[in-house]
Amino acid sequence: MTLDAATVCLQWATGGLFFLWLTTRRREVGLGYGWLLRGTYGLMALLAAWLGWRYGEDAPVRDVASLGVVAAASVALAVSVARRRAGVAGQRQLAERRSERVAAMTGIDRAVAEKDDEAAEFPPVLDLVAPAIGLVGLVAGGVAAGEPVALSIARIVVGAAFLGAVSDAMLLGHWYLVQPGLARGPLLELVRWTGAIWPFHLAAMLWPTGMASVLSGEIDDGYGGLLGWFWVACTVTTIVLVGVTRAALRERQYSAVMAATGLLYLAILTAFGMDLVARAVLAP
Image (cartoon, rainbow, N blue to C red; front, top):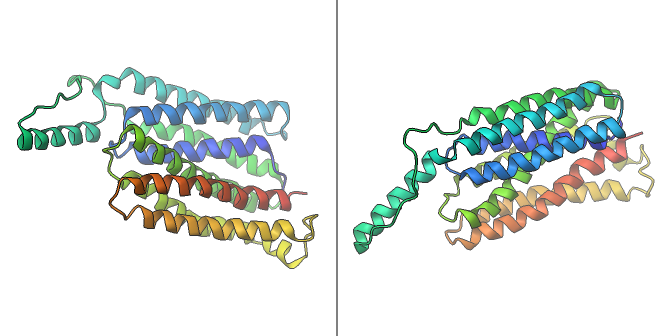
């Protein structure tokens, strides 16, 4: 199987946009978080299209799908901006409840942000369109990557989910600086998903012909087996970091969220090592 930079960029964008929907559907996180992620992953999908056209394998379906992801993410972003005055129901209700408690305790009324009661909120289902298009492109990228096709597609799709979950978790952790009253539920959900996908990603990379062949010496990684053991270290470290992150989020102090975000920074590095090192070693 070949390792194509265009497919990797589309992987990251598709996975990130899917887990954005997982967060926006809760209607708790502020609109700016969605703007940030749609813009970031939209640019990443645009880079995937350019890399595929300029340097990649012959995978026109993947490249067209990358442009489709850009278009769908842009439409979702435009709708979200256009409906910004409606706000987010969960965020608004939380602010109102806290204002009522402050007023009851101190007698001081806190001004609540203005909202347009007549305006419709952003529909989170729009965030599903881009990853659905991206999935088509990932399948096409898996076919272009070579034999065995089914295993190639599985590694690319599972890798997209894995990288998207851990990336969104880290970015959401930073968003708590912007929205400090946000409950930890959205972040915990992403961390749980990262841990849940990890064994499937591990199985996809070990499935013959996979990293087990590298560790046994059947496949030469070109460095005397060093890359194989580096992959093992990344794999183990990733799930350890996920576990420690979940433990940190059980602490009540606000600093626990920042500690969890720092751990997720490291988890992104090791997750990419788990995915890309394996695929690079197994590439012809």
